[in-house]
Image 1 (cartoon, rainbow, N blue to C red):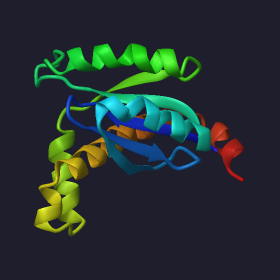
Image 2: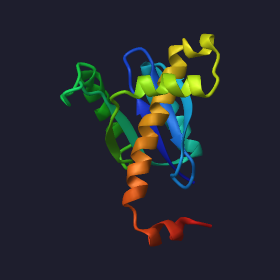
Image 3: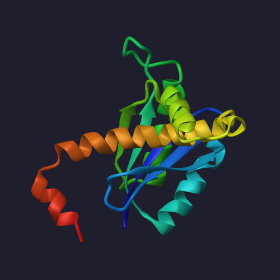
Image 4: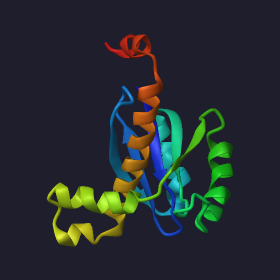
Length: 150
């Protein structure tokens, strides 16, 4: 089954999310140390067909790239090297941490679990991926959606 992978790349932790097979919904997947990320993605690619990587692009409120984008720009060539046939798209990730905290509160997550930054990172990755999926699905023609329905 085809899956889309959301990536909230960070210097200390990287949050990951995965789509459902129809590409409608994003779910938090895991949080991985950046040094182990490529190996993790290789193992995932052995089990799932990865259609695209959707990487969060950190921006300032004025729309300019944030300082963290330097780390992401260093990471992107690795994705291209180890996964040459899989497209990589960037998605604005402004406010995803705030939205992740709100989702955890609304979902009834305990305070101690909300303080765990690994949870925030993987939920942020799901928000990044869901935003991309929503925009992609809104742009698809209705007949294309019907072709994918079993």
